[in-house]
Image (tube, rainbow, N blue to C red; front, side, top):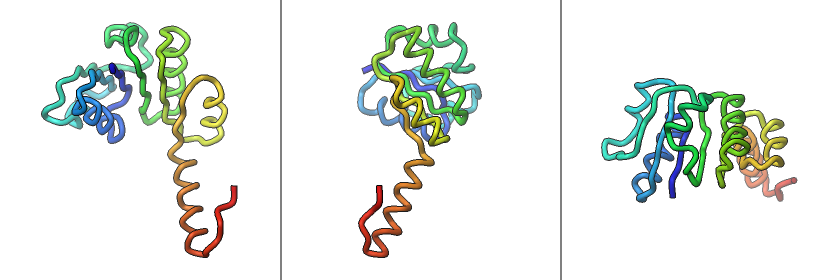
Length: 140
């Protein structure tokens, strides 16, 4: 499997290290050159410094041939635009975008993009913990 990960912070680098360790071909893009330090010493994938919204850089990083594109920058707008570019322009088979805003996440999840919303997940998990403490069933 070939993956392109946009964003090399804690989540992006952890995913890159995980997939690379499991034998997958991983390429990472981040605006900060020092973000490459988040990758494991044994990481043997590629790292590109630049904006994930730069279509020429996406091409250079191999977006035309990837199986998966993951957008995990710290900006919802960037992640959503990268996801849309990957879907519409390059027809990447699997696209995953982190979107903090749960309302935007819900909207885009219905439009061909796999969306993970840390805020929505945290709310759900905390609600379940409170319900468990009180001996209640969770409310949907």
